[in-house]
Amino acid sequence: MRGDKRERILRVLLNNKKTLSKNELSKIARCSRQWVIKFLKELQLKKLTKGTAVINKKNLVKYWISISKKQENFKSYMVKEPLKLLESTKLDYALTTYQAENIVQHYLFPSRIDLYVQKKDIDKWHSLMTNNGLYGKGNVRVIVADEHIMYGKRKIKNLSVVSIPQLIIDLTKEGGPCQEAAEMLMEKL
Image 1: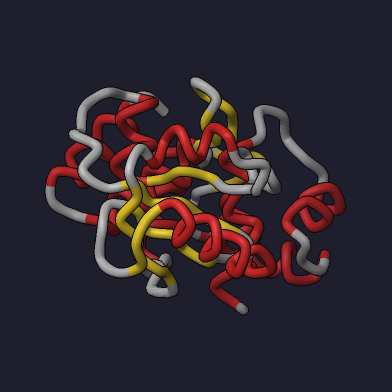
Image 2: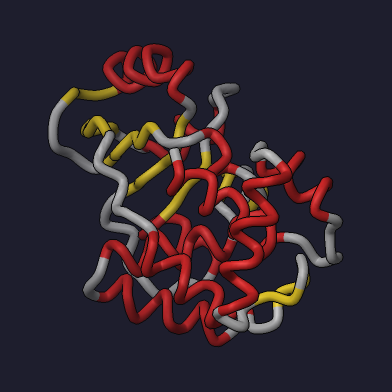
C-alpha cells in the first residue's frame, strides 16, 4: 500500500493546475494528512516540491518512474473492433500505453489496447470481453489496478484515456518504442 499512496500523491500533484492545501491533497489522494506531510518532506528534500507546489515536473515524473512498478495483474483477450466495444460500454475504464499514446500524440502504432479497470468490475469486463471475443493472449489487456490510477483521466474521441503523467509512467515501464514516446510527451510537460 505504501507505493500506492506515494503514487496517488504524485498523480494528484502532477495533474492539478492549482496548488492544493495538504488537507485537499490528502482528501483527493485518499491518504492520511500525516502520510502526505511525511511524503512531501521527502519530495522537498529532493527539491521536487515546495510544500504542495511542484517545482520541477520533469524531475518529479522521473522520480515517480523510479518508484513505480509495472502492472502485472491483467487478463488478455482477442477482440474484434475493441475500440467500438469501448465506445459503447458504460463500464469505467482508462486506456493507457499504445492506444492511449496514439490518441494523444500519434507516434506509436496501436498494436495492443491496454486499459485499466476497477477491481469491482473485473467480472463484468471478463464477461464483456468473452462475449465479444476470446480469452487468452490477444490484442486487449484488461489491467486491474488501484482505482485512483484513473484520477485525471479524460475523454478523447469518445474514449477514456489516463492522464498524461500516468501515460508517461506506463509508456516508460513498457520500454522500447514506448520509451521514446514517453520522452516526447515528457518534453511537452
